[in-house]
Length: 454
Image 1 (cartoon, helix red, strand yellow):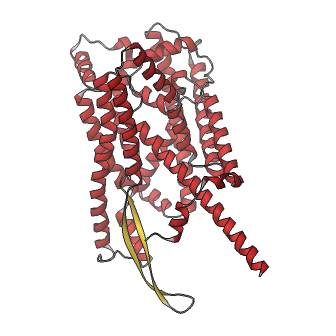
Image 2 (image 1 turned 45 degrees about the vertical axis):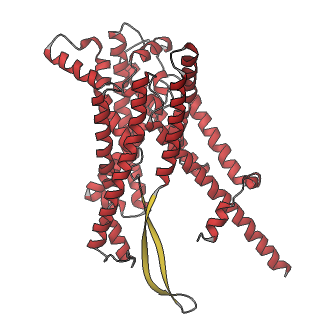
């Protein structure tokens, strides 16, 4: 039987959207901030030759740069001020999360509440600046060397002054994006950093659609392949929407407590365990590790001697690690499964959860508090993680296989669909929460008005 709140939430109508002034202001602020993000993606770094850079971008397709370029909405390809995007922040936050689960000092900070989280966020920002500095320096140096080896002058005046200026610009661009994301979170709708990543991916959709349409008109893409891609994308979106909302809800019961009327009442709640606890981290990590050797050899250029034994071996291995190759897809699937279990173990601690339930007097019916509850949580989490890992592997490997069989240029992968669907569902949920709060506010005002009339 659905509760009154559930019935009330299901009857939310968008007709009340025009009355929700605060919600409209939040949505307009979010749209304006994302427009600023898109404008910044077209502002180039000082000292960059845009025409030569576009030629270099055509030569580095297929590596890890393509994936990062997708997350930044083409900013890396254009070498703009926000070429690094928010990926350094994502990496730093993941490192801090893992460290807080393994290091005793950081684990103690995590248990201190709001003050501890603020300290961990500060460490994350320090790590972001450090990663931006290192990545910006190597990006500027690699751009100079790769352009020189290819005979293309992508940098007008190469040297240390260009590298220092590029590092300062890239660090400033990334930190501005973090500030913009925080403003969206506090004054807009949804998670700001996630919306920025999603906006970068969605900005590439017109390019993908244009390539598909032009390929179909030229005859390189048949009608069956086009329909197959449409069916695949729609099916994956529905599958992701279902599995990302799927939960295993464990019943938690609390002992009877005295109420204001002197009655004894037992409380019940649920402990939700997501089917995909790791989110989009496993495919990002797995693809990054597999594409890293290819990217390094692309920037190595002509310095790799393929006639030697070592160079020939490296070249052979890289051929098997290309997109669509059986070895690549096998290692990709293994990496996704490994990082699913690894990151789930990092973000969810059964021992800590069991201790918190015991301190609050809660228990799972039929399971003794303490060690038995911890073992039961670990058992349930392992079983649902198996299903989550299979789901993630299917969503990420199927587009790779389809693209390898059809020869369509790689862009719309499972990782991008995961991010877009996740962020969209979360944003819609927040909009519904604001509409629900607005309707409750109207009901309270009407109740007070009736009380005064009486």
